[in-house]
Image 1 (cartoon, rainbow, N blue to C red):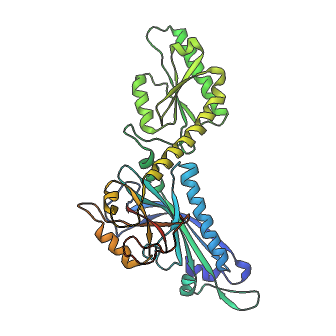
Image 2 (image 1 turned 90 degrees about the vertical axis):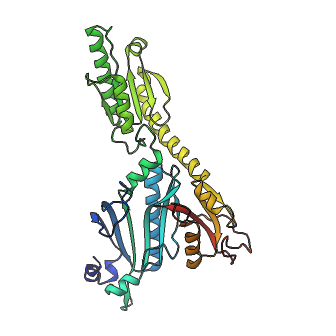
Image 3 (image 1 turned 45 degrees about the horizontal axis):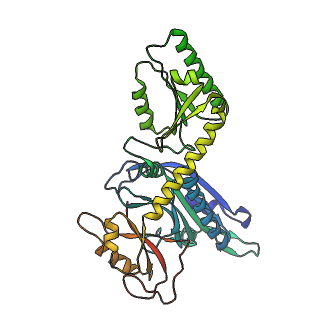
Length: 376
């Protein structure tokens, strides 16, 4: 791609240049497959921008990082920590790499959710991507790149899923509500028709209000089978309509995330369902955010570091920001079949670092707080 940038960019008037691509990637150097998380072939989005100044490049690097954080937190209800990668973990050739890091509490492993790299002028120098500035001098462009993959799906499934199946956040759920009529053998034909007509009316009403809704009217399966089927798929709300509901002119709304139910009058369904979908979205994010924060142990010495990792935690420590120390931590934190810890990120939001603070491992002066963890 960059050889073409050298042809397309001639003048300061050609900048900034922003290109985004969606494509499939095949990775031949590949070990330890995990569905969605790490596979030989995956779909990703990758952006490449070129600017006249370093300030523009750095500003947009963080803008794209904020966009990725929004994908996870506002759409997928998955909390992430925004940070910088260490020199060892950053993208080769970049000035610095920023990242959004998620965490899977069930196995105690961090996972890189998406990265945004400030490439500086390293690649423009290599590929001779130059432009004529307003003062007629030849200048190298400043570049960034950023990418997000189908790994996001795996992160969402692993963070929210339970023993019943997937739990879909409402904002990304293909179907937000499933309507399940529950006729029984005692009902007359007219009663069953009235129930079916009411179910159709509710579907049309909610769909016209923008709710993604489906009705399961298959008569070859029991209601219990349908419950399990749609719970497996993670549909946020199950709307039940049974004989007693017809008598009381109510429906029963069941939440997939918490399993709680509430009766709602027919006249209130149109208002209550969108409201409940937003509540579910907020509750899912808050629950996972609390879980994320509770999974961080703060230490100022090596004591308890490996134990915290074995307890499926991340560890935040003061650090001297040296690659040799990072390698030492990784080597000495491996235990049994468990891998050693690596730096997940240097959080952008840094806790207060006391004057004279020492690195938890080397004893050298600490430069920042860093988040460690076992990871994918």
